[in-house]
Image (cartoon, rainbow, N blue to C red; front, side, top):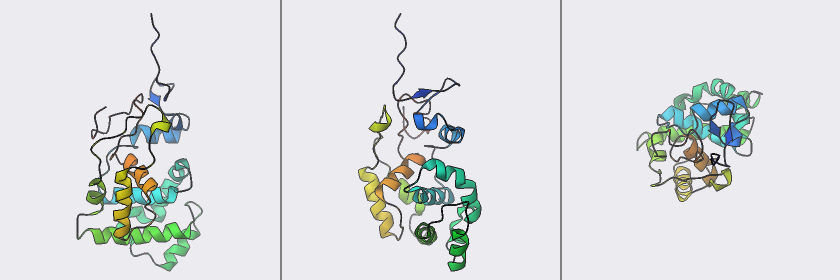
Length: 203
């Protein structure tokens, strides 16, 4: 009898479930992968938070941001755009003094500006609808991590449009990571137990 073939791109956990290596060891990353990553997010606050956190992640590991996420949420008033948009220099200094977040002035100022831009978008289609309007007609079907793209024509176009609308720290790579995180594309490996679970894309 032929032994079943295990997809080389995944790691089988103690629970018998297949995940990519990055989501297999650290319990925090595993829980995030199993319950959040790639699931649809469509509400304004939720999308805004993820835009902000992806910006803070640039140049760092996602694990670092995820560990700091509770403090980020507290420091930025739950990433409520109307509140963050009103931050001034005193808030910037407060945030720069907070060791629980990533203390980068440019990224903090960008978060405030992006909150203001989010509010401005309400007179048009809104942040969530704008971002989701760049959903492609097909999604990658990767077997290994190296098969997953880091940008796409849609993420390039989304980055350009958000910049036109006044957003910053929204480069094509950052926007592709956002698209993965909120379900706009499904880059779960084909052998993963999460493939196709978003309800947006078939397996």
